[in-house]
Image 1: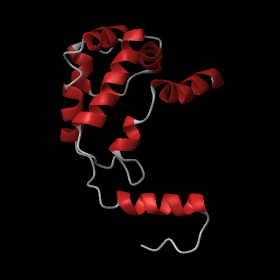
Image 2: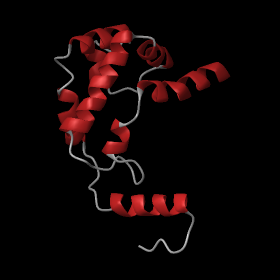
Image 3: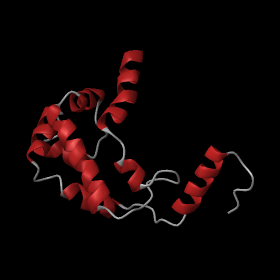
Image 4: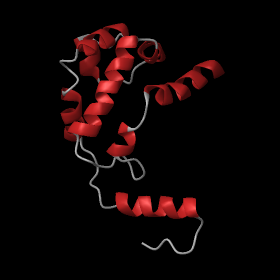
Length: 127
């Protein structure tokens, strides 16, 4: 891979892509390792209940959460706390891997609750 003579920000992105090319892609087992650390956390069950995602039928279905459930997640103090625990687990318990060609587990673990909430809020306001 050659980055050639390019601007500083483009060069940084090029170097980042080169470094990421060496990382394996994340597997469901990688995510499971990180998430298992959150299950015993006191806020986890409360978050699942407040977001309407706690019943076994819902969990077994693997459905994408509804807008109502996502809204409840973003309006729950327990879910904010659970999100922090999840990101800590991704950072500390999960091997570094790639979620896509451009996003590593390290980059994902730097995402904040409010950063994740921003596009949801913008989408809801556009309806």
